[in-house]
Structures are given as structure tokens and as C-alpha cells.
Amino acid sequence: MKVAANERFSESLFCLKLTCEEALPEMRPGQFVEVRVDGSEKVFLRRPISIHFVDRQRNELWLLIQMVGEGTRQLSQLRPGDTVNVLMPLGNGFSPVGKEGERVLLVGGGVGIAPLLEYGKYLKENGAQPVFLLGAKSENGFVELPLFEQYGPVYLTTEDGSRGERGFVTQHSILSREQFDRISVCGPGPMMKAVGRFALKGNIPCEVSLENRMACGLGACLCCVEQTVRGNVCVCQEGPVFDINDLSPL
Image (cartoon, rainbow, N blue to C red):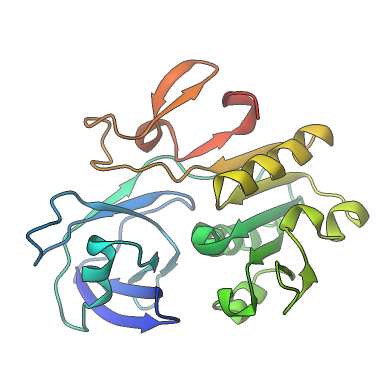
């Protein structure tokens, strides 16, 4: 694939927009890709990255990436016209729409918001009502809010109170005043567990997108093994999206 754009949001957060000559394959919200990092003697393994958005009109795949090490630093330096080797689409995504008009709460923290934009688009296009609840340390942690707002109402929490309600996503007032048919969540482990406990207490179906390290994306390296009620499974093959009832007790 070729880099169409590399948009920098902060020192550590950027969005790669990739395109190719042929039409992009069908992709489900919640699936991921494996990107090969070229040009570095220190990086040997591909980097797993959530599918952030698929722009069919431009034939572009968007990847929202947090720069955390040498591999993602190399990716952050890509320029329009550069070529990238991408293995896609991989894994199992979020559930399809269950019924017309169902309300689905999409909860994201940090770069965990990445797969929720494409899922929100899919839900709205297929008759559901997505609602976004996004959390960050401060207002500087939010990106692309107008895009999210195209597909549903957006509620925010910040730890320092600089935007939205102060606190964590599980403390937002929307959880006590509105009802939802399902919840889907992606973000830091403690946040996902907290949302999962809230869902279990309210008997609300809930899916989580795990962020285990997935070196190969094909179930061969066994880096991403997760304990479930059915035994140990590879997140890259069985997930990354799981029903919370399939995971170990929260």
C-alpha cells in the first residue's frame, strides 16, 4: 500500500492513511492489520494496528497509531508516496447489528478509541444508534471528535476535568440516566475491566477488544495467548473482540 497522508495529532499520536490501486477488501469493524516496519535494524516483527476507518470513496485505510517504541516511531516518519507492506484484514471484529434501532454504547480510552469510529459508522449505516463515551487524561487526548459526532452523540470524561465530566468513563453520568442494549469497549485493561463489571451488574451484553501483543497475527507465535472459559486461545485468531462472558472472571 502507499501512504496517502500522515496526519500528526500530537508528539505521540498520528494517523496513517493508506491506499492501493485495487479496491480495499471487505473489513469488519474491530479487525486489525499487521504492518511491516522497514528501514530499521532493531525491528523484526510486524506491528498490529486496529482498523480505525475505511474511506471507500477515497479507497483509504486509516490507522490511528500511538508512538510507543522504535517500530511505531519508524511508522510515524512515513511520508506520502512511501510504500508499506500490510497484512489484512485479520481477526474477528465486533458483533453485527442485532435489531433495528438498538442503542449501542461505544466506550474508548486513549488510543483505544481507534476501532470505535469504524464501528460507529457501521452501526449507524445499518439502523442502530451508536453513542460514544470517550475518556482521556486531559482535553489534549481527544482527536477527530467531529468525525465521531457524524455517527452519534459523543460524551467525554477527562481525569483533570479539562473537558467533559471529571473522572473515568465508568463515572460518567450517562451510565446512570440512560439505557443501552449493548456495550462495546476498547482501551486500557483496567478501564475495560471496570466497564465489563458495570455491564455484568446491569446484565448488559458487552464486548471488549483486547490489546494483547500480536506479533504474527496468524496464531503461530503464541505471543497473544489469553485465558478464557474455553481454555487458552490466541487473541489474533479468536479475537481481538471477545464477549466478556467468555473471558476469565473480571
